[in-house]
Length: 429
Ligand code: ATP
Ligand code: MG
Image 1 (cartoon, protein in one colour):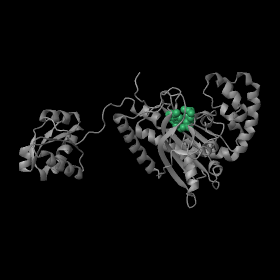
Image 2 (cartoon, rainbow, N blue to C red):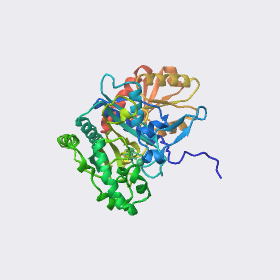
Image 3 (cartoon, protein in one colour):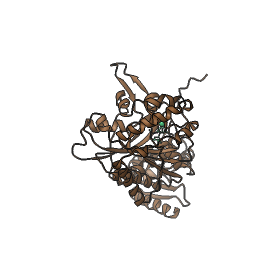
Image 4 (cartoon, rainbow, N blue to C red):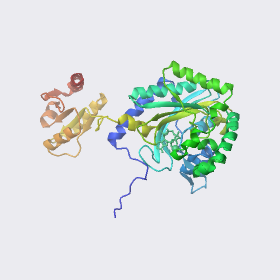
């Protein structure tokens, strides 16, 4: 038996090749969010458990069975690793009174924790990009969120991602629908699965959210929430759609789309793909006008969405080349008495001039150092021996492109290197 300690099931390491791609993704995402005027917010990964039971809802999958909750050994506080970001974001906004002066467009990204059965696209530690707009009442912000997602898929070159939307109306509209839905579901109680029977009274809307294919016929024929919406809710929904048409973002109205969390009202949406099996939703969100007040703030409208980074990455990386994404400009090879200090200084000089330079550590023959230089992926080797030190010079040797090695003065190195890298790039593409 091996005594190696392994990562916790459902929690993944991102090794350098993959982590570089995550950083590239995060760069694109940050630029995209800034282009819509969103600003970052960072909240702790651990929160008081009642934030989620109250904020996400007692009768949701997350709160009923997925949270990593524990008692602080020292003071007995009930704490939970965040399963999603909206409740934390709203808590912070209320706690710091951010809505005092103006509405807020916010985003965050980071790990979330849910105890689920791990599979492709479903993990116990996963990552989301979350976007929240607080203090905006109109349908334009709902549409902004949907349209901005469409732009990101475009920026990433994702295909086969489609949009489903629905409206959950307001509390009183849902209450009238709920009564009829319970009556209907009671008529089919024997055909409901265990979750369905339990939710029939606690959270009947959630029965419609079931992923059990056996439940589909019952769900299909259930009373539709859309038929219970009043004039204002319908108008809001119609205006969202008008803006989507204006932006030429195709959508499908899915009357069964109810979302897994309690806090939504009016517009809800999901971006789905057929490429990830049961993990079809890569991004989901909508309006949640009641949550700010529910978490102790002055009533304020809000809407937002969460994107599953692992699922988006599975789509984005499909067909992309593997291997390292970045390579250093230079690998510094040095051999001979007194060359180490000189090479060390040249390395610092190059970094100061904006180049990436890897210093050879650990000695070894010239040949073995050149092997390391090749293996590093660097574009050039800067070679320093006794002769170079004596003459205050270096040797620049191309590693990727054809070309002779050249002896250069220390003063001209940065300029010559910049020119060489530039012309390599030109000839590449
Ligand atoms: P699902 O129906 O797939 O369980 P959900 O409704 O629970 O998703 P949300 O709470 O809306 O998901 O979270 C927003 C997004 O986060 C999801 O659309 C998905 O892309 C991603 N996500 C949710 N749970 C996981 C998970 N366990 N592993 C990876 N990504 C996840
Ligand atoms: Mg889920």
